[in-house]
Image (cartoon, rainbow, N blue to C red):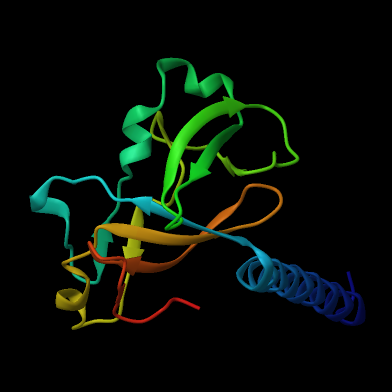
Length: 164
């Protein structure tokens, strides 16, 4: 390969990377602006690993309600209370979302199925602001992807900064 061809190949690769990053950012921004609101109750995690530097381990009460056969399904269907707190309704392999329910993509990490991320990172020195976290607030897109937007206390009040 001559130098001109190498430069063109590098330029094309950089352009593809930038386009992919822009598309991902656009998808996240679209979910944040038009996704459905949902609140998940957090479940206790081993106290020795709740705070690790600038990190908080997360688990969800709903995950503990998932049946053993959860791995056979792609989505968890959740119903919402008047306050927006989600509870388990059913499991399914189909979307679009049903009226009155939110379909959330089921995640798997290390053989464990979950409806949300397993960790939350925050700015150094702000750990105390999140110690009272009892709920996670999410935006869910039409494909079931849930994005964590905030942590809330027992009264559903925002802790720290909104992630948006």
